[in-house]
Image (cartoon, rainbow, N blue to C red; front, side):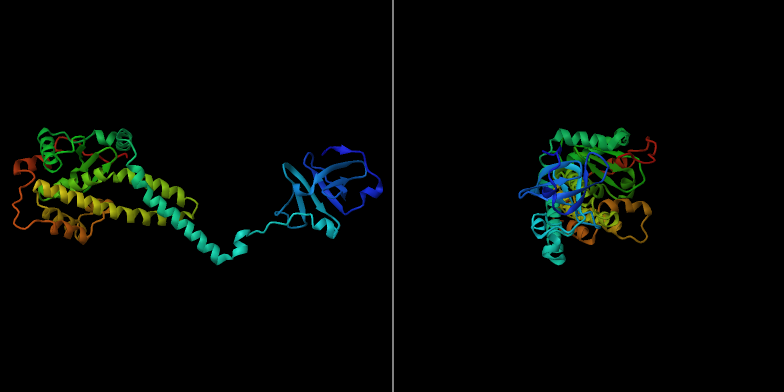
Length: 363
């Protein structure tokens, strides 16, 4: 037992001197360690504690002054040797843990390679798994996510009747099967369109003003519809959460830059897939993809473009390859029909004429 016991004879108290804290008080005690084989006792002038099992000792690696030991399941209990322990006692003491532990044993270079391999595996899982997880998210959950993200901003869409009718005509033309879509325009000067979970698409009025034909807008809307069908937004949210958790322990700058690079790589892949979906929609609707290619080229030109155009470039990476893909998809000898007639196109471009301009949005 670990309570005080009557002192043994002086012969039983032969052993190395130790200092001792019992974990119950801050009083340092001086004792003699008596080795009884599988156990030991701490013998003081007026009391004795123990027996303690040698195997219950643990080395205190934080003590750099003298070799000291704790006792399992007894917080605050410590002993330290004043005298050098005999070889027999030293053999029973637990080894002091190495600071590097297994890193020191295998070496820094192999350990670094092992860490890099584990990190690469973890990043790969985080990058690839969300695609499958996103498809398991119920549509009702996605819709609630979209409602929360869009906030009041999404409820202040432009409501000119003629413009609304023109937008509905465009949607029926390029995506007649997608009846559950929620697509509307808000009055903001930025050239942009965003997709939110739950089939919600928001088009900024600045994009309508920058477009030169309804077919350019049809290509952009088709692209956003591609994100909806591929569930890219939900997948991106899941991936972003995973990357934030995975990289959260890194230095803030390194973690932030790595996160941004990985997110950008994913974004470009998603953009290509959304373009393919848009091209397929336009092909079925017999709408020319060439105007969309021209739109991308204007946005990607950089120099000479209005500053407000950069909003679309930032969220939808524009490249010459994307423009070429739309242009190459045009069928030779195909007679294309405009998405909207001149009157409908004018109505769509003026859909926000009765709506006050928004100063920002609250996603």
